[in-house]
Image 1 (tube, rainbow, N blue to C red):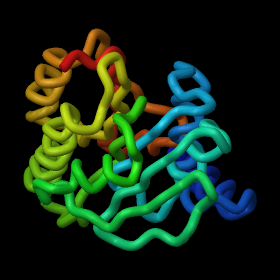
Image 2: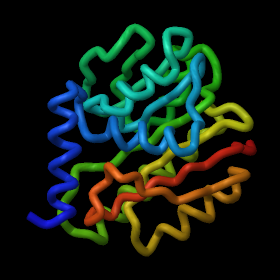
Image 3: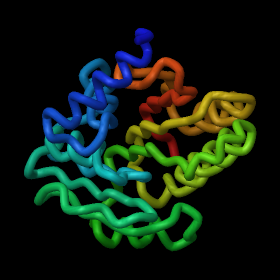
Image 4: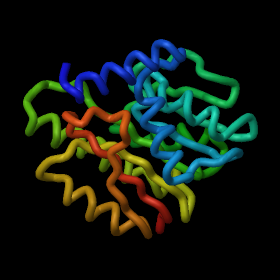
Length: 198
């Protein structure tokens, strides 16, 4: 078995053994362990939240005084007392208002692990995923506080510089990350963006 396949199987196996919904739990936990941007009491919005791996990690990190809103086009089964879920599409122009109605204030952090169902045609998958991430960024004035943080997945490819440029216009610091729990063969990377400037 090749090393990358063994690694992929490790986190898949761990998620089952430790009772988490997906390997995504480890991705977010590893990123936060290194950069410490999530704290107790924070308000977090998670786009592309199903099946709930990031919600599980966020719920633990913000604790009982924090709140997490998970948004996905598919329903998400309950996660914890400090987690609310919402069925919604990032293409819906009223989605930001719906989220803030539930949250009651602007978020400290927006997470986006969003992607469409993969077609296998790389050019299409890459471009559509970038478009979805840009839709999340377009919602930030409604949902993210000044100085806040965005952690967003992106598929690497020709439009990655377009996305990076858009993020640099809006955040004080933009960094690209690939956590150990991500498969090395995967094109996914994560942009950690700190210091939102409206």
